[in-house]
Image (cartoon, rainbow, N blue to C red; front, side):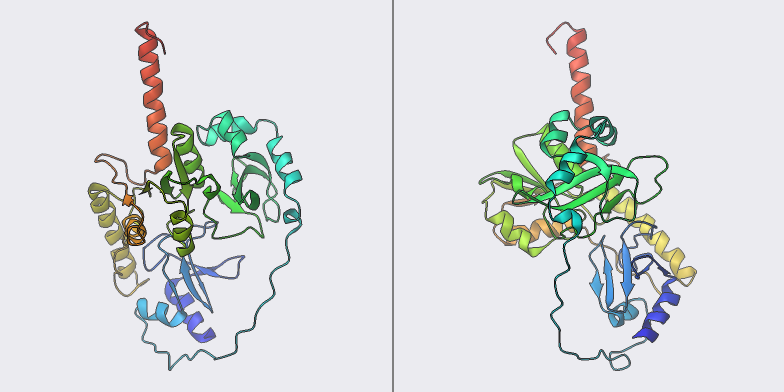
Length: 341
């Protein structure tokens, strides 16, 4: 497989990163490769796209990009699966409480979080948002710290850059953090109204403006089947899948046409330069697909439809901020009219 891997590295013009995987533009959804962000990567064991969820082995990847191969040419060795031991917990995982207290006692944490999103002091305190250095991370600069809880236990830490000198990725994850955790699922209650979005902080912002709902986030558009059962166990009144207004989220017709034209133009340019042999199949919006998956499981799920005129790539956080601006304008008008704000 090393020979096939070398061929794909050359064909896709991939670059190796610190994680010993090779990164490039996704040949399935067309997401551009950006240093410091997890999009599409591959190695000798296969490929995966964090945007569209495409995954598989090297042979399948080679066939997709037009390389004439077969499994007979590159047979996978059949070896008995050995149960690998669970990785040892990182130092910060033995007792997260002192670390969380350190983050939440940082000076100016309300200011820094408010500069990122219009979160209230109550939201910052309720979800234990803090500021500090992310543990088990290559970055040693202070970051906005977002803890992820499961059954009341902190199982993951995410950090976002906010200092001008920090040129690392916007979001990093502490080594050892649990994956496949539905963010804010601890807030679910029987019979609640649920919003499923992509961005974790946007979920908190949505609950701030509308406390009657429970907003959970998947951290992208990929969905874990176990989350369907987790949500179904609460017998929700309604579930709204509110993904971003982009090609792989929940685009409205206007945005879908516009972004699809841009995507096809970019793919044609890559075909003309020889980066890929042909234009791949257009990415399919994951929001409507997820809503249908949940509906098939018996949940009252629908996909949010962005209104006409919504800017491309708008997300739930954008919608909330727009509503907050409208509320502020309405309060100012009432005040000027001499009515109670």
